[in-house]
Image (cartoon, rainbow, N blue to C red):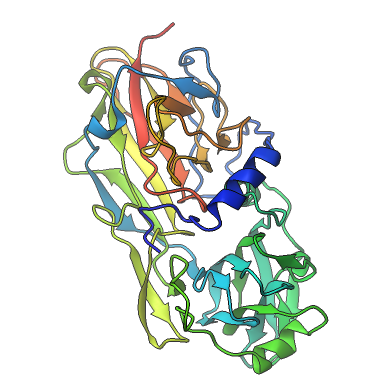
Length: 422
């Protein structure tokens, strides 16, 4: 799958029908806090003026610039300490029945798991789940740091957005995570009991997104089994699937273990974002200026890309100034949006979520958009945050945590719009 095209062309017609019937808004209660729940969360900033009277997550219409023609902000991508990413999205569809889609060894320490699969058309129902084995010599302690398992459905855009929002909430705002558990040497246990209890069938998407710490080496397997089978035993019994199933087209963005899955995005060289320079955009996860991360696929025994950098976290810290005494509004754009004279395209609907520092609104999770499932109209943008004008000679930093949204086409440009104080 090319991540520059839509992540789910199939089943597009079915998905669109489901979206029309099941456009479920998901609201996140974000409150301000004087305590930083995690060292790598964006820091608190002073409050600022509002942009067009809007709040974070609101849809806005701006027709005085063309998204595709905006200058790009130059930046540096610097690896930062974080969790190893076990990524399972290939084959995305289980088109040949039960099997193991991803199996990787994990080292002690922080690990992140991203599961994104659908049982193939005509393959009946089954259970998509993940299993962790203790391959060490002592009892393994497993402690969750973040948890997201959206309700299984055919509404892929809602699932992609909710998965990110729930992950951010649990990681940075003390949201609920499963209780810690232990695994004895040589034993196995499912990672998410809720996922393991759910039966699905085509075209329902099963998406889990987790971060946890372990103190023994382990092995994680993502698989599809039939109802009534034991998940732990299935690891020994099921076939290890190739990335591309024989007789079928390729599906999914990749799989494997990715040691580098966290990056700092900072200003390049002497560049400072200046409100006096007009509207600009920042683009990550495009496979060009920001390359796909490379990892190891143990089933295939070779290196492979994560074509979309799904499950990767970008910690944006953009230094700014206000030479013209204007503030900065930060918006999410949609490069595939359509106008009234354009034909619909399979990439036009976009959703997602980010974590922002404080500005006109408190720090917290912003769903893209907040009230609707997605946005798709040319000229529409979603407000992420607005920041006050800075005094002459003053600089400040805009901090946002971004991860590419599942089910949306990439890249998703972040737009910086100067505005006058109301």
